[in-house]
Length: 175
View 1 (cartoon, rainbow, N blue to C red):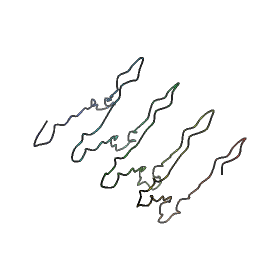
View 2: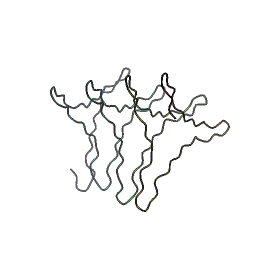
View 3: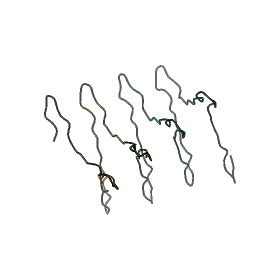
């Protein structure tokens, strides 16, 4: 603890290697044979301004950078777990934003990364829905706008926008 200066930092590092793989770092909650496994919480503390949380893979010069996975486990007899991305409210200021942006490239023969939003499939029943909407407005406001747009192009052609329903083998296609 520190009253007038910075609090102490904690660094947890895997082992370093010169020619082989570096050491892994695993943080796993406790298992239970007859109940739920324990929770894992990673958070910054409350303060005048709360601290940031960053999950990043390391930079590389020649190979591919590492992936970042956010996934829930499978369930044999129950439902799969949810993933919730929630932004904090600004009580007297604006609410926070969510930004999904794929990777860029400077290569003349390469393309920037894609973003895919796809609902879950079902082998025996219906696939999941996808809802994209703005929230309802307050008493004196207007609801948020929605923009569906392709990017600009300098010497090439701008991208297309396609909205289509899928085909059906034995039923009717959606409208």
